[in-house]
Length: 239
Image (cartoon, rainbow, N blue to C red; front, side, top):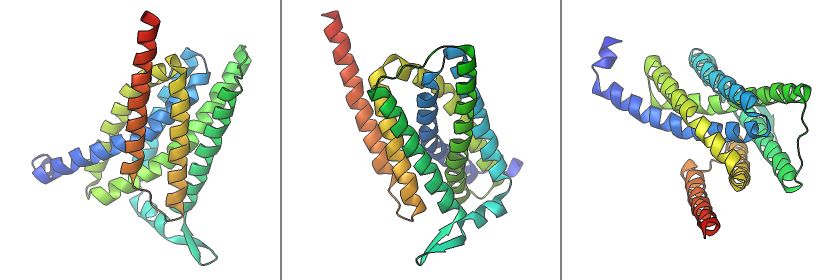
């Protein structure tokens, strides 16, 4: 451990891997921000905290069983000469779940469905949201940890990078969720991002890799356009 602290290569690997983990965590933050926006604030905060805590637990647990995880990339199913590993199956299932969930939420926004009150309904929604967060945390954790295994050799560096990335996710998730709740048009934009991310996950599952740089550029560009739209609307209200 002391050797790692004194090694420039270890610090370079930690910084690089932390940056990658933070970028990969953007998907998780977007999903959390959208999914908790339909429940009251006290429940939303608890769901967000539980979701990010589970994300950290899943990532560290997966790192602790590297041999099994590496085996996930071995083919386990062949369909018409196309081989699928457990990683492919999980990515396809998770991507399909994201697409279905985002499409359902977009339909609800377009139809302007209102969620009724009641403590029982709020509690039921809370537990259903936690279940959805667990499902998507597993998918995002798998992609994140496979990246970590490919980037670093030491388990300590991987765990440190994952912990730092999860702390950044925790700090940023609250402001992002509040911003999405305050500006309804950004929620529709975030849901469109989820569809895009879901398509990318399904494509990865079918061994058709979409460079993440394209996806993140599209997200940053769309956010910039929406930011200027928000400024324009605010200025028009002032006038």
